Image: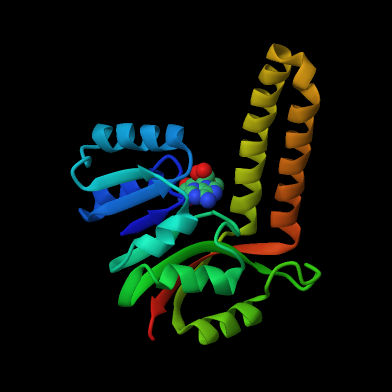
Length: 199
Ligand SMILES: C[S@@+](CC[C@H](N)C(=O)[O-])C[C@H]1O[C@@H](n2cnc3c(N)ncnc32)[C@H](O)[C@@H]1O
């Protein structure tokens, strides 16, 4: 499996542990990759996991023939949905699978996000089949947002005390994260897609 923008390796390590499969994780932040390597050792899966620092826009050109590729919560790093699926497709075998964490726009999202219907067209155009989709429940989402926004606020306040001259940066980060939570809760439906490469 290929885990693109793997972050601190939570998904890669869990997959290796649960399924005994080989996973390669790639992320642009070397600190995250160091952490992922440490976690793989901690969970006894260092022989199944390989982690690498890299820009996934490069990786999609190089990495080939995987059974499964995962793009978890990485937004539009690889472009719009159609570009993203085309790039991911290049990394898996025919008949292989693509997992993407993304979102369907609700009717009030002003065309900023593709609706489910528009995503279905993208699947058709890119030669993939929608095998399954798992939505995040509204209540689960608002609980996660509330908890994480609490952590962000706490950390931002610590940093504001430490670096008062940069307080405006931390303030604006808190605001941007709150806006993201509001958008997630009101304009889009978070969904994990399982796609099969059919042509
Ligand atoms: C929200 S995190 C998701 C991490 C992980 N996939 C997960 O689901 O837990 C997004 C990750 O994308 C990484 N990222 C952003 N742009 C990237 C790029 N061009 N190449 C590689 N990684 C990138 C960030 O460093 C970050 O770890």
